[in-house]
Each structure stands twice: as C-alpha cells, then as structure tokens.
Image (cartoon, rainbow, N blue to C red; front, side):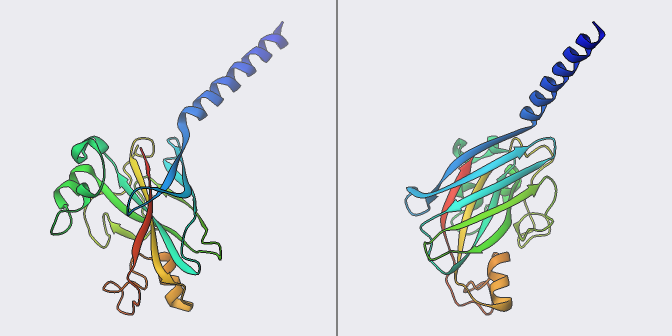
Length: 213
C-alpha cells in the first residue's frame, strides 16, 4: 500500500511539474516577410518564450538574401502592445514624418536590440540564433533603449518574456568585409552603413521582418 501511494504521488508530481513547465515556456513560428510588400520571403522565425527564466530565444532561417552579404537581425520589443497606435504595433509607433516618435516609444516601452550576424551562403540563406533576457542588454547592441544609440524607450521589461510583442528585423550590411570591418557588420547596427559608419560604403537596408504577437 505504501509503495502504491508513493508511486501515485510521484506520478502526480511529474504531471504537475510538466504542466508548470509547459505553462512557463511557449513557442511560436512566424513567416519572414519582405518589407516592400509584406509578401512571404520564404524563411521562418521561431521564438521560444520562457517566463520562468525571463528569456526569449530565437531561431531564424532566412532565405532570398544576397549571397556573400553580411546580415544582422534585430529584436524590436513592444512591451505594452495595448498602447500601440491603431491597435497594431508598427512603424507609426517608432517614427513620425520628421524622426523618431519619442512619445510613443516611451508610452509603449519600445526597445531595439541587436542579435547576432551571419554571412549569407551561396544559396542566399542564413540562420540566426540568440536569446534576449528581461531587463538586460548584455551582449546586444542597443539602438533604442536605456544607454543605447537613442537613450529612450525600454529593454525587455520584467515579465515581458511572455507578454511583449516582438518583431524580428533582418538588416543587410552589404558585401562581407574582413577583419574589424566584418566584425562591425556582424555585431552593430551601423557597421559599413553609409551615413552612420564613418568608413561605411553601403546603403544598409532592412529587407525582411517577422511579427510575433
């Protein structure tokens, strides 16, 4: 009888633990789209949100890239999507006709942080992976956020791993350079970009994006 009770108790504990872990972490997939017309770009972005750890992990497979070009991917974090304009988070929350939408960036709690970089292979493909931590910019180039290029908005808020809307943006830094030039292309927003990098030679563009609500 005692052994049977112990077995039942162990089974219930295992079920409870698995249910708790499932509730703490969830994943979703989103198609990568072309910025120019929002048509499918052929690739996919997957995020795994872990509320217990306070992290969001990404696994992005991009296609239709320029072979031999250096690319980065960027986390665009909308901490409070309920405050986004027109009930949809997007460019209107980041920009006005004359520049950054400072009021809305602060109101929504928007942050733009860098992921890692890759060089597209001969087939125009690249895979990106990374993890974003709540209330941390460690290991990320911050474009919008505390201490960033534009010191406003927010990082991923505490508790935001499960609730923030995340947009993934792929950025093209031009043909891969070498040495320090390549390092800048793969780790910074401005690397090799005309008008942003003093030694930049390429008009950087953001060809693809994905939306995770």
